[in-house]
Length: 191
Figure (cartoon, rainbow, N blue to C red):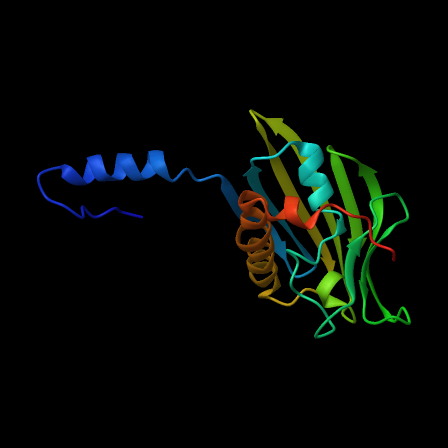
């Protein structure tokens, strides 16, 4: 990609330098591999909280930042962060709902891995989703890797990449940076 100057007399370099300093790019997303039977996505973002706090916000009640669901108004969206726990969407008080994935590994502030179809329930596809957390200065680096396998439609890698960009960069990152997670508290779900 070629950059075209937006100003004459070389002033655009100064403007570009200021923009790069003031607006750091702390998020990365890429489709690493894609085929008819699977794909791999890798995303990363830096958050201004410790790895433990990032983990806590990304587990338990995630309804404040996760906005895709099967029900129009789910009672709860919850990840139970323990081996054998689940990524649940509870529809109502009677407990009707969906198990989107099963937690395979959980280590607070270091790793969370869950396996399941997520939003593609009913399709012959499985996602292995892994969150890894690393201290980075006063904050943390969160890496998200999604390995998908099964009957993969040609455009699914790009669609799933777009959905994860939405969750992480448009919902989770602003939620944490705004401090709203502190107001909401990190309470455990009753489900």
